[in-house]
Image (cartoon, rainbow, N blue to C red; front, side, top):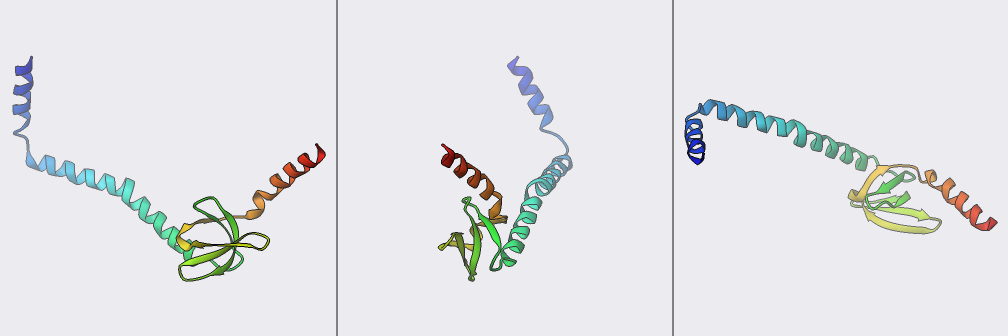
Length: 117
């Protein structure tokens, strides 16, 4: 049984080198279109987002903090996360523009339920 595997391995070793080269080229092309190209597109969109930040925009950080931009510097952004509460974060940690008011009605409804009890 082991001898048959050795015979098959030796027979397959004498293949066409152009077939192997074509396989490697196809493998690199598939990796480019599946992995590298989408990542470059996402990075370009993120750079565009960071370049368009301005005072008053509502954003979400990569850590999940929601806030309104109070000040934009070259590398940092000052976010107002509550009335009078401001934090500084790196510009690169801004992951998306979003609305802070999306979570407010849920929190207000929960507070009303607590008051009723």
